[in-house]
Length: 102
Image (cartoon, rainbow, N blue to C red; front, side):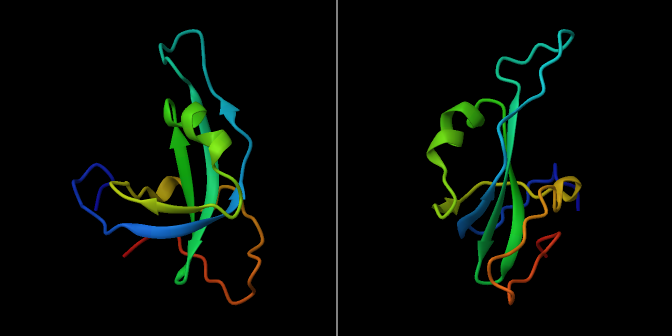
């Protein structure tokens, strides 16, 4: 399955477990209006996954999302290339880590 395919995953209710720094990745030869990204580790009762915000979502949402914030994720895409970017230690020793959603 390709991340570009139009698979509609069900909404997920998750809690933010870890928040990275806001990263700037702009380059002079690229014409991106808002070249930012931020990584978050989010978890629900089944396990923990990485979540990435890109471009215009970063300035709008980064400061309002704190560790412990509960989010309802809808209309999201799943990419294997960003699995386990931040490598935080789960607070709960029983928490499972997933690289994919199947």
